[in-house]
Image 1 (cartoon, rainbow, N blue to C red):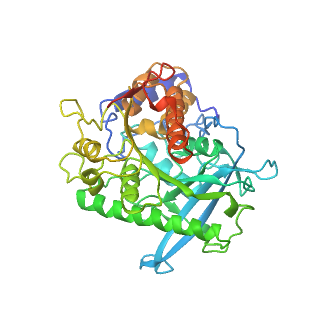
Image 2: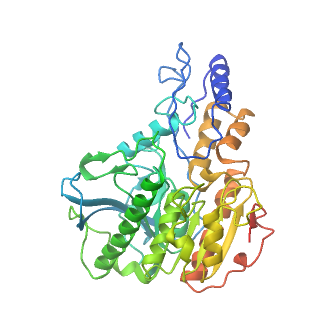
Image 3: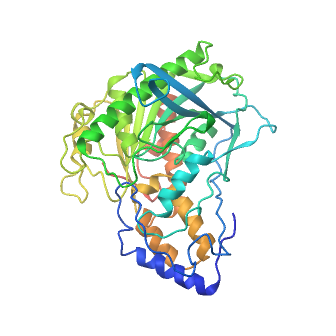
Length: 441
């Protein structure tokens, strides 16, 4: 990781800015909102600081045994008009993360393409008044554990689609995605054009919803419907790949063996925040999706006033996991952070169900945000005790390493049980190995 520690005097000034942000709403759990905070006039906390260096990150190593490959595809849905796009139709970017044949020739994929990396950096450096200099996050220089366009391991693998949170790129849950792929899954991550930042081949870039725009119930309803249509369309395109066709709009050569590695009789979906709502709704309208889960995503159009989403009123026949933080989604009315949509879904659900709570966590702990900010602050401030306070305000008191491990284990167990038919002891009751995960119902 790049060293960006400033000199002692500047450390103190930066520390005061960081500490001050604790009183400026840093603990909010609503979607990212950039708020400018004045920088030190002498260059502290700016790119003019001679000690400033962008920070690259270490993604947690996947726990599975598979080598990994990844490829990005540009898709055009000609059944959905979109006059804002050059084609006149709905266009999407997706990534497939998959078990790869052993290869050392292909380079490791970067965490994000350059323009997306710059957009996310700009949003996150100003988020909640943290006053970080633009360019702090070197996402375009950070390596994943997946090799670009590597050949697919030549056996069929279950397929899982992933929908990101409101305003979030499809890359912001890469630690979860790579881990599932290392366990033998093909994970397909979606950007939802015009909402999440989306970068197309050739450098065309759409930033998505402005950082300061909060979702209202009408927007949320439309977004869920759009995301559901996106997921169903993507599954259609995977069926084309299995049939030997190439759906990429630019005619990109597909990785060797890709079609033979997709087992579309075993398909699931999960999502974070709004993506979790979309995952549940997709299972409701498309029975090709056999199992799903939400990571801290309400199932209603307004988190306080509703109305409940159709899936919360009707439930599902397929297995579904509710995985929440300490600050949202309770199914018992007498408990703090009670969520009527989770309670309604729990009562209506016909298929297998489970409600887990990640103790000590806030919503963003269900993304890469937790270890990215932990590493960034340690690169700047060393082991300063202020880091604990700020990280608690951002993602909760749960340890980032333990949080990542627990989420990976429970996601893997859920899909192993419900897509591979392997009964999982981990899903039957609380485990001494993961005391931070509680069975809420």
